Length: 501
Image (cartoon, rainbow, N blue to C red; front, side, top):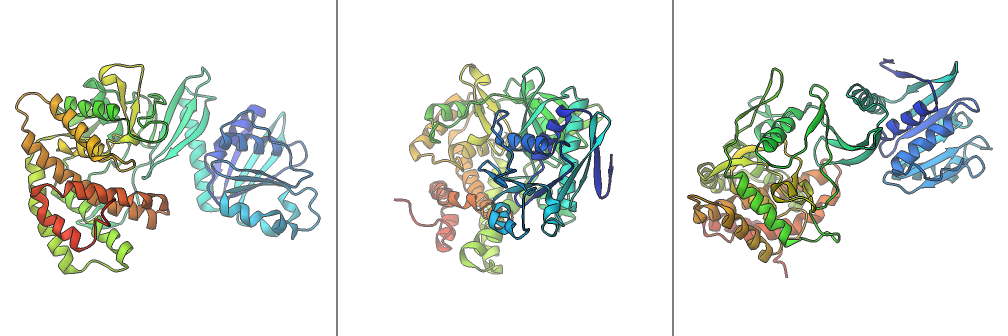
């Protein structure tokens, strides 16, 4: 049970303690301290060991008690330092043991924190008491940490009531949005994926009562993922099957499509795979796609239209984030006016070109290579929730100018050629090539702004390393004759960086 300041749980046996450690591991963030309280034999070390093994993703990891060494260090995905203060002679020794350093890098688990109580005021406290044959746990923590812990326990309840009681949970990834993913292994040994994507909230209003994600037509809840994945499967494409869902909580259990990386082991491009992915798009663009999809009883998902307002607000990210980052100033009204005047007729062409279902994030991180499969089933498509009806060329540009990996001009052309060769009927290649260039310019304009926003607003500086690649892609796209005026503007403002050698 819970109250606003505490979570209280009953653990009937050691298995429940191990499961709690696993659940807590998924709630921890850098800088967290977990203070473990309880008499000898209450299970503090058992809980700590389960938590560390869950972060390490290794159920056999040796986790010795730090009773005599006082601290054990684990350089894991989230670095962990395990302190046992039972033999601490002076609270000031904690500084010598590296508590501050531990929190700057990862998390700290502390047994016997009462030996230095002044260091553990506003932290997560886990208190274990004997109750019959089992244990009772009281968890108190600062508001943000307690909220994370309550959420991970709600996820466990969702798994239990969905038929996956006892499933092992492991962190998989958190993407560039509000979503997080876990790998779960059922009691029968089956691997599945948990998608944890609460509905968007607390976004600032930009105009007309709408947020950025409203205007850009980004998914507001997991309803979008369920609908688009279902539509893709119904049309013969490989998207995850939905095995369990709580739409209100934003929780899904979905099919695990495999571990086959789309890129090569060294992270480079495999031209053959990219060409196959281009041919898959050709097949998609010759299907008729529904506008409305039944997701559950009484729940319909209406696929949005990638409209002018969406294109414009995405392009504006360049001015809103990239200019302040590179030039330490805001864009002037004159610059914004010229920028908008240049994009206005180009966006009109995008609205008038061939339209289809555009996944909008069709590139290497979101494609699973299934070597043992054939045809359309060989490529698994994930992260599909932001799909919209828009230019058919958009996903081709997303693939052939993959934001996270270098695609050479030669391979880019091979992808485009493979796509065009696979199109049938009255396919107008010249019109496609123009739409491809404009969508490539629009997408990479947006990405320059998004990657800076991820670095500066969201604390993810790793995205900045991709900027030179995006500038190179922009140079390629802007070589199309229809974009000559836009290219001149970008060159004049230094948006294209230095010419790659």
